[in-house]
Image 1 (cartoon, rainbow, N blue to C red):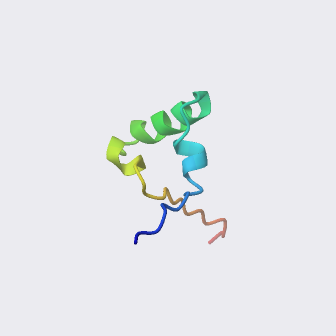
Image 2: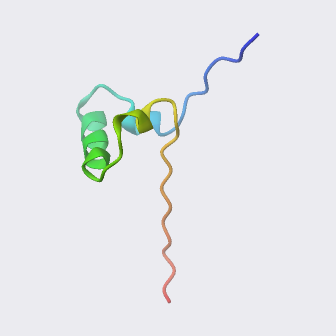
Length: 52
């Protein structure tokens, strides 16, 4: 028995077939991320606001 697939939070941004999903995917593709990176994998961003 297999578990149902987990809904990823990044799918709300990158998985949509609407204008916003298109803009988010195109922005990432413009930076060299391939199409298959959006299929069933989380998209993770790291931000550091500390100053040195």
